Image (cartoon, rainbow, N blue to C red; front, side, top):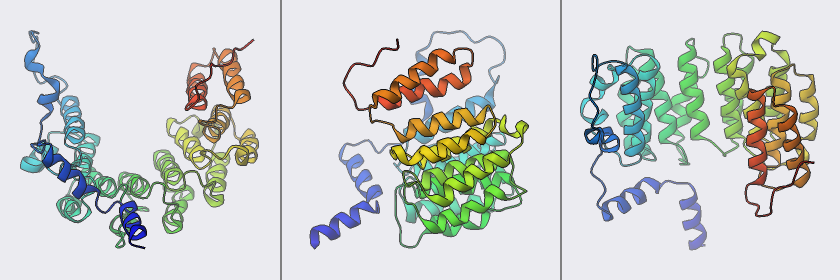
Length: 337
């Protein structure tokens, strides 16, 4: 019983942050790093021509990502911890959102202390900062199962917000926080967004992806049927939207490793118009058989690669699929004759 209790506690991820930081202290790597430590641009012997602030917004955005990843889960950094507001306003729009969301990476797994530090950004007058803060809340809770459900409590009210940016922050945050949980309450919260008339294609796509992450490998009936119906209801012009691809990915994730269970959905996708229909069918089939090494499926993908040389965008999905099917196998790949 004691062993079961320990395993149960560890599986919730509540001690992830404590254990990670204990290891970091033991290895003496707690000192926060700055992007320059990674770039090492001082070693470059390149003369600068023209103004030095060219593309500064992109440089700041890149620095935000690097800062987030290099200090991931350490709980401290030198960009946001010391001059948070000053750094955020060096970015523009989505850059602000990304910079704020990177705080979630820095505070990863620290549900109690991390959310307190993020909370102040939820009251910002700038929507992009608030959106990033919502996403940061989801990132902090990623992989942690807390009885109080702070991620759901904080993000639920923004799922149908009048601002599409706020919707995206909360929806993606929920997807990350509850990935793999198959939580019915989270799924029921997200499903109405797909059919809401105020949801942009970007919101619809991110919602489908979030649902796919939450219900991954479950072949959840409500999730698959709603995403499928959403795809069928879209017009030809809407199906060409880049964000529509996330509908296909979200649908495919629910069938991860399910093999034959995906057959009916693959057949139903024939009703969906091109270019999304065929790409979605291929993606669902690939994910359903990923890692199986199924020779017939691999041969099918290789044949599709040859026949679709004239459609490079669609071909990319097929090429990636043939690799996923081979994952975990050691035999030589079949030859297409």
